[in-house]
Length: 182
Image (cartoon, rainbow, N blue to C red; front, side):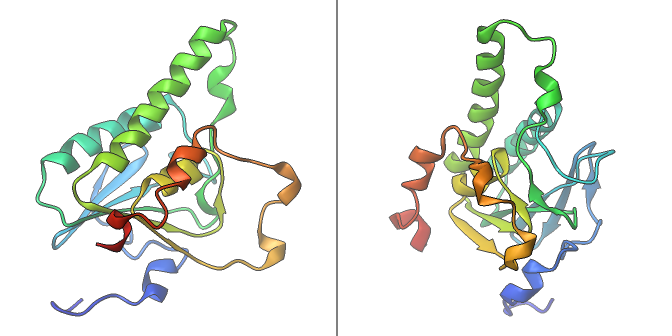
C-alpha cells in the first residue's frame, strides 16, 4: 500500500484478512503492524469458527497492554476465519462450574477485557464479516467504528436465536458518539 492512500472498504471486507497471516502469531491472535495501525486478527487455534474462552481473552488482554503503550492511531480487530468474525462464548468453558459466582466471575473477566478496548486512546475498528454474535458483537460494539460486509439473508444466523450480548445496552449507546466521528 502506498503512503497517503486509503484502503478501500472492499479491501477490508474480504473473508481472508487483508493482513494475510503475516505478523506475530500467538495461540489465538495474530498481531500485525502496518504503519500507524495495529491489526489484531482473531484466529482461534484448532477450530473452524472463532469463539471466546478464558485463554482467548487472556491473550487479548496481553495484546491490549501492548496496544495501550504504543503509538497507534488505529487498532483494527478482525477474523482470519472465513466463517465469520466470532460466534460468542465457547460454552464448554462453563462445564464443571456449578457455582453461579464462578460463572459470574468469568463473565466479569471477559467484560473487563472488552471494556479495555473501549478505553483505548487509539481509534478502534472492528472489521466484521459473517457470524458476529455474543462476545463477537460485544467486541465490535466496544470499537469506535464497525466496518461490516453485507450478507445474503441465507448466510445470516436465524433471527429467532435472539443472541444478544449480555452488556450490549451500554455499548450500543456509543454509536453516534463524538468519539465515533474522529
